Image 1: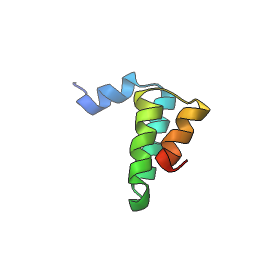
Image 2: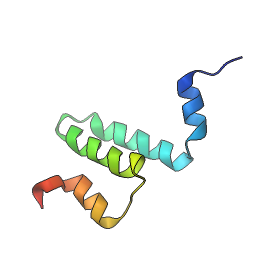
Image 3: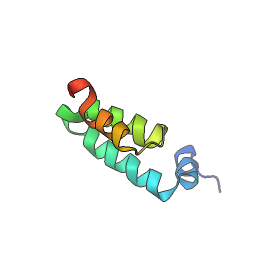
Image 4: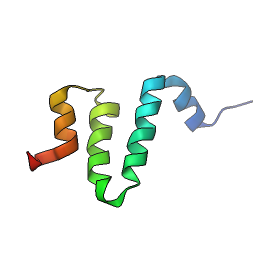
Length: 64
């Protein structure tokens, strides 16, 4: 019995990454937060960076 590609992907991700992906997806459902969600995904999921500076940049972008 073969697993779907999505199922195989989820099995290889850590629990924390799966939680972060769900969180970022939920943030991205808010129309005003789509840009923030994209930056958070890159920072937290893709780059695996949770430093204060990286999170500040992801949340506020160039507004600071």
